[in-house]
Length: 400
Ligand SMILES: Cc1ncc(COP(=O)(O)O)c(CN[C@@](C)(CC(=O)O)C(=O)O)c1O
Image 1 (tube, rainbow, N blue to C red):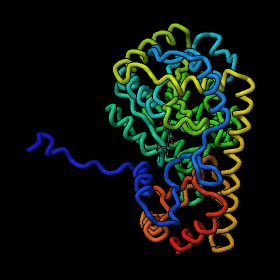
Image 2 (cartoon, protein in one colour):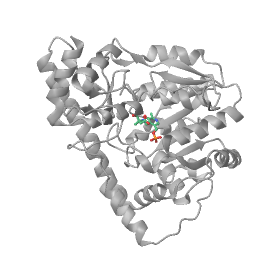
Image 3 (spheres, rainbow, N blue to C red):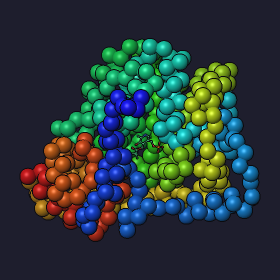
Image 4 (cartoon, protein in one colour):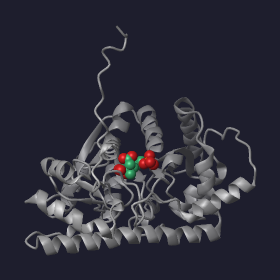
């Protein structure tokens, strides 16, 4: 018998497993509202025009395939910090930013988790309830203890700010707080600017370390600058922060695995030492990051014309999602007027947290071939006008 005979079958991933099930389905009406990947009005994946232009520029340079440095492509690291903090930010001028290119958002979060495990021994990471499911895997696999802080209020289909404040106030000083920079996944509910300010003050008072997961910059409001409001506010308040960045959704670089782990700290010497330790960790995890996607992101952000064109395409993607939100809400209000569907256009970003129970989700999938995650989340990026009626009928049938 194989020495691996006792290796158990792992369960399918709660999110990526939905895409696998969708692909396996032969139902002509099947609809994939699972993975948060943008689709155009024909429900096809999109390669942004700016990405194609950037690739044209890159290929015309006939560059080699040498290793990048452990910390990644210099031009990308500069671009990603500019995008996060704003070009010329004082923290950048003062050399207080340590940034490494990493394997998209997930890899960046993992390097951050490894840094916390090694240099913040015993710190607990507080993650929102609910949150992106893979957060638990990332910190759990690094042996970092995590706990939930209350986040979603099902009664108001909004933020449980009172619960959040109580839980973070009770967190031991020195704890880490994982915050979604914008477009919270899966709820689509973000703190207001005033609430962000209160959270920043709370982190300061309680000596909590904010770790921002910035995976949807541009998808909350359609504006890349506005969507960086929260991390910029915390830096302005003098807080040290960690940030993971992903270019999967906003630049559509999903499979290129483009992201960064950024630390904004109090002084240049600390930033230099932290960068050296981030490099030490990355070297043992994957040695150095992939070249192509980082060159695309650097080309787009560092080139004024491409950057402006990206902003227009970004607003177009966010706009299409907003439009289908409105159409879905209208269709549901027409079919089921007794229920309040206003949460659908109140929520922002890619997702809507429908409140459907696992059993109701099973009905959506088994009876209507609508593929979505069992926590009730739907990715509106996977919906178009032509399928709104179909989805609304499936939801009404499931919530009966
Ligand atoms: C909040 C959050 N952080 C990080 C990531 C990681 O993305 P990256 O590694 O590709 O940069 C995702 C992706 N979440 C998706 C879009 C896909 C997934 O589950 O991996 C989702 O469907 O929730 C995310 O939603």
